[in-house]
Length: 436
Image (cartoon, rainbow, N blue to C red; front, top):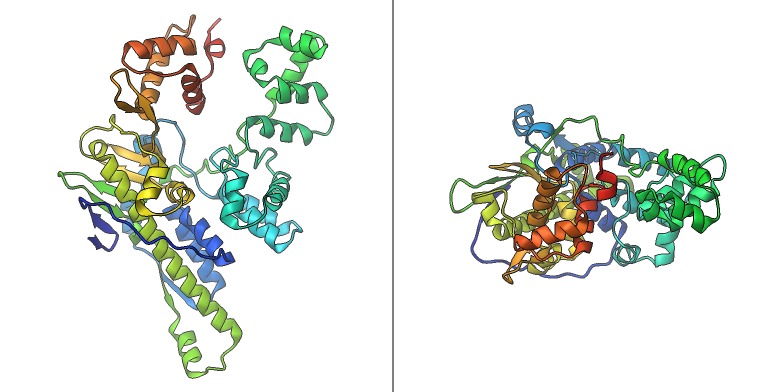
């Protein structure tokens, strides 16, 4: 049962009818709207009202907003250590897009790419998936991405670290061919500071390699840094009240401006059928906005319900217990595309009895333990953080040594998986952690 933005947990899972729709420009905008946080959507609604005289808005009570603000530095929990964000970088990129001379369809694709950037400013969705979503040939997606990669800050829109660094090197006033080759073909050796090996492979001196490394160090592996750092507060998009065995989900949509049709213009349209096309178009846009906000609300509630059902122990008992859960599993339960789930949880936070968490925290991959049962990647990451925090800094644990320790604790993890999780957590390799 749903009452306003409150949904009480039910025992059974539900199914929604799968629909196949032609992807119009407004539908693309609706997809983008889904990934807005409460703060971002609030700003978007205000901008729409400024552009459309038919839209009247009623601002939420300031007391309601202030009661829901949570200091990110004190209560925001996240195993990956990611800070709260806003749309500052997106706004900067969109402004550049306005000034850039491109075709309308290219603008649509670039706008979509901008809204798909991750916290570091990288494109994380595959270009094939984006092409399927937007119903454009992949060649046009690649061409649009190349345009985005010309925007400031340098390195934006890269698909990985290597490309990010190369994009920045190519922007330099002069060429640094050795540095480019080091990034392109020897990035792992650069991280390990294997200067002799790089020098031998490139047939250059160690001094030239070190000089090129000094150039590489001036590059920014996180081009989105410096944007979105000013706000010290976030507004949780959900609250989960778990004071009993039956948790209650509250969607904080009461913090959004309420929209309605300006009665004066609506009466003009009713009494004067010959009213201008402009008013008719603006009325259609209002209806699209109202419908998109409603669809967003339904999708968020459906996704959050599954999260709470699957991670019930976390919400009721302990923040240290998460079961394996993937976005694909959630998408199959509520019959939506996996990418829709990804956008629904992007930039969203939930306030729990244990603090405020990003929704993506609750998606963890399966790890087999020694008893044959499934553990979650969340458990492995927490243990990884603990082991490295307690290691001998003069003789840090290698990835293989971490694997061996975890096996003794009943977790059967590959060295490759440890390396992957370590990188996700922003933890350097043992050679880089060693204190000399």
